[in-house]
Image: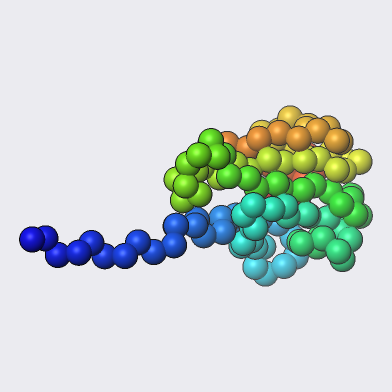
Length: 127
């Protein structure tokens, strides 16, 4: 006889993704912010105090500049721990959100690939 199999625990859920926001040209002595992003969920960046990350020192940053939307990709028949995280960037700004130097455009949303960078203003100060 074989020993009984150990009980199965709850399904694995991925830990919240981490992202970094580098404030290029900032007067802050620690310009690299580590962000813990909700999964699934949204994360808003802007000047308004109601945003998840508030950037108040630059008037060119919109009150609600952009929003990151995090979703579990893949088919719904896969366990959550086996599904890839998809990050979508929504531009909500007047002055632009840029991916790889190209303007996304207010109201547009684009999926980001792992390692891809975006900036809140063309040529910084937030990337």
